[in-house]
Length: 208
Image (tube, rainbow, N blue to C red; front, side, top):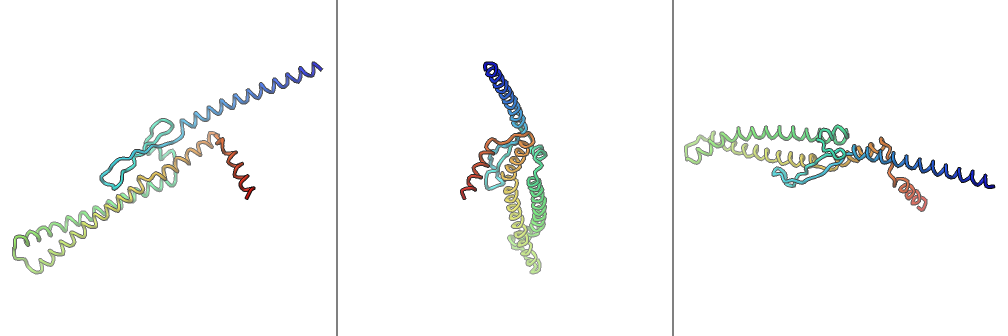
C-alpha cells in the first residue's frame, strides 16, 4: 500500500514538474513573441499645424515601427496597402491636373491683362479710341476677369481635394490595422479575448 502511494506521489510530482516546465516554456515563448511584435508593429502620431493654403489646420503625420521613426515612403513599402497606394496615385493626379490647369489659366490671365491694361490706361487718359478697338479692349477686360476667376476657382478646388485626400487619417489607420493584424498572425499571437468573444456571440445567437 505504501509502495503504491509512493508511486502515485512520484507520478503526480513528475506531472506537476512537466506541466510547470511547459507553462514556463510557453511564458518565455509568449514574451518573445510580444517583444518581436512590439519591435515590428506600426503606429503613427498626429500633430495639427496651421497652413495659410487651407481653411482648416493640416495634420502632420509621424510614422513609427516599434519605437523607431520611419519615413512615409518606408511606411508605404511596409504596409503595401492597396487603398493607400490608390490614394497616393489619386493625390498625384489631383496635383498634376489642378496645377496644370492653374498654369493655363494663369497664362491666359497675364495674356489678356496686358492689352486690358493698355486699354484702361487709354480710357483713363481720355485718348480717342477707335470703336473697334473699344470693343476688343472691353473683351480683353472681360476675358481677363473670366480667366482670373477660373484660376481662383481651380486653385480652391485643387486645395480642397488635396486637403480631403492628403490629410485624411482613415486610409492610414486602416493600413496600420491591417499590417499589425497580419503581423500578429505571422508571429502567432492570438488575442486573449478572442475565445471569450466567440463564446459570447454563440450564447447570444442561442438566445435569439
